[in-house]
Length: 332
Image (cartoon, rainbow, N blue to C red; front, side):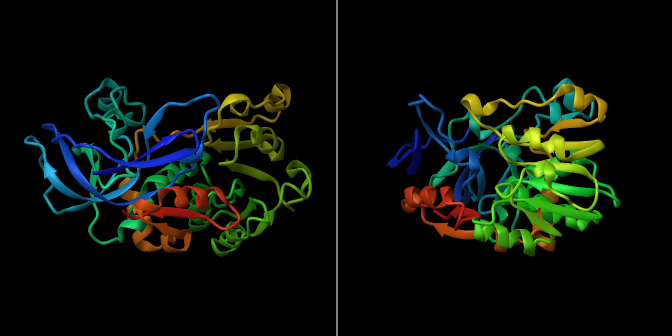
């Protein structure tokens, strides 16, 4: 079975053996796996090798002896992490704080492969969407969580920062929720993504290279900021927000890029709120699939490139080129 491995920025494809599924596991033929921004990250000095790919759609090939509710041949998507349903937080209706998360990450099998083993609890049936669109449910669930934390109201003036796929999906959701005005901070030179910002309904695009974001005249007070750009941009997000504003964010960077700095006094006197979104375990996959089915989020418009598994290196190179790529999906 062919599986992709990553060491730094180098990607290799080789044959590996796949063990039988455990009692509560399934064996899956991968039919699509999206490239996430975290797949492109390279930690300085890290030379370890690992499989990768966590935005997965597939077909069930084999069931563990204790699996119920799934069938061989069924098309599914995988949650990248699932709440166990048994720990104290889960039983207290706080599944997002589950302390015993179930995930294929723990099993060592990942999505850029022909087949994989996954916890049965992570599989959600999805027969009606094409696999390449269906696998977008994983990052869309991340966008849903970030929007939820921002507490968008009908009179909200919203600024989104970072024109990656998650930010673009968040834009589509915010638009559907009826926010008063919606602005997007993105680079005009990233022409494909800038075009999607317009198509997904933003009232205006603000290029942060043209002037500091906090100095831009939006013509209204920005009371909600959704940040998918690097942590260092949080300073600008907090400066751009008006008194009482809420800033929700996702975003991972390593080394010095993992740190941000902002003036705590200004944060205090403006009564701002900074809310971190981390959608693990995944909480909104069924809702994400519904949004894709209903066209709330146009999955086809987001996917700019498709590659075979044998082209994984080219797929990664394309995904790094933000001038031409929005979402890149590997279809084994």
